Length: 274
Image (cartoon, rainbow, N blue to C red; front, side, top):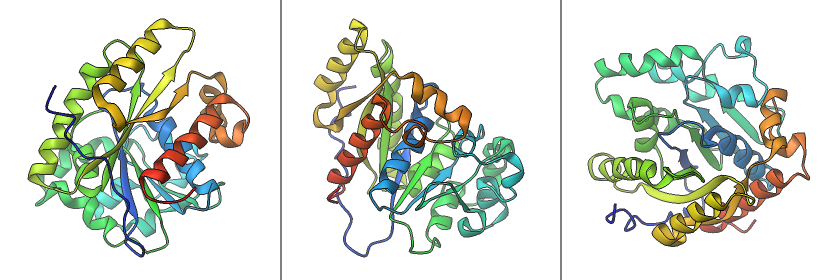
């Protein structure tokens, strides 16, 4: 894995440039990817950034976590990729000011197979995002827990990748596959793709293993890793069942404070004063 740390950090976009597009990706499930997407988006919206989430996970957890019922997902990310609907047609308002979402549903599961027959199948999302109205500052793409065609579409469309990394024993081994994929996508499809950062999630300060993993990841990746860590927090786990981000569910809990700090770090790397 020694060849992975030469990937650059993301750089700020120029004023008036199109929205910055960030894929939130990790091929391993259960690392806090969707939770990070929802709450980072909410924190960015709280500091006056206009944010669009593209739910590209067939489980649709980002959509559910923002309170969208299945009946409210008439046009979804599946329709954008497969049926030619625009992101604007699929886009839904949420209860969070300045935060909208393109929802997902189980029909997206079939998109992996259907995309195989498409010309330029890896470019479908990029082409759709190119037609997005200029009323968005950030697009966060919640990727599925795999490195298939849906994630490939997200990486090809994105300016940068944000990687949630659970503080567990196999963390470094798992991230190596994703980083190799990012390097391949850079070479073949998207030379500008960068790593925005790695965020350590589910950190338990009572557990020596969490501290050990955090130290190992920082030693290996250096400044690519955000200073902010996302703690294990009951309120963070409870919030999705209420269809709301933890920042709305309990603004004062440690998880909420952590996501606000993460948003501040992301904006600093993007060259925006939080």
